[in-house]
Length: 302
Ligand SMILES: [Zn+2]
Image (cartoon, rainbow, N blue to C red; front, top):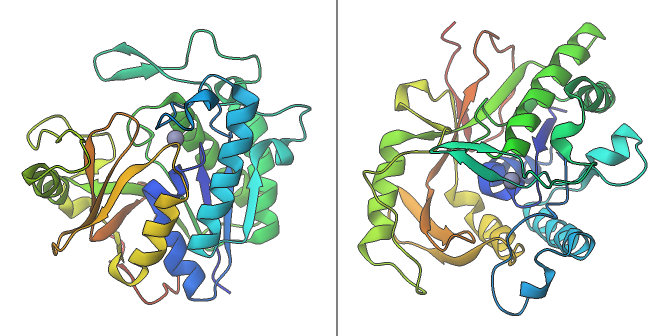
């Protein structure tokens, strides 16, 4: 069976950046494994009702663990593990928080805990993930590009851990045929910004369609793998709704390129594109993968 293994930093990232892929894979009856590196205990919290959780690390960790379970149930993913269970450390591996160090450059919080994920050496975390890869033997491993999607230090670290884990697993006997980096095609993304900016809802702000793009954005010709979101949109929307501390204003949209919109704690709308896109990790020609219906990959360019 062609398995998929995803590596993510916090609860909600599995849904926000790879939700359609996970749901499509699971709906095809194929194995999906998710590693979540932290419980997101430094995250901002949306809404007055849940606001007391913000700043209370253990309480927010417990709450977001429950949200993640709900999202995975919606996506159909049953095999989930937190990184600290793999590493075997005492105490949780924690969210490192994020501070803007400079325009467009983020770093971990200066007051992060001593168990912060960014302080777990890449090789220590990667060895643990590599063991899981050797056990599950996935055909596809998926995560972020080197910028971590938008620069959060836990995402950047998760990228490094994933890449190193794949190397270690290959050295130990399982070469993962395809490593995917989540990507956003620039033109689709700007079109999506325009769609949600046309008539903002629920008091959310509109994004600037001509503003800077996140690090995951790439020219369309760099996209290697596409997932058709519509067939799994109900599952995806249910998974968004399972993360109410992190995701708000989820709305389905009657637009061919932008099938929904939502906002995070910054209360700025963002589009959910009709195609969830990925790049093959560069310099690593993909091997044979039997992609499930709804996922299309173009032949390797290298
Ligand atoms: Zn995250």
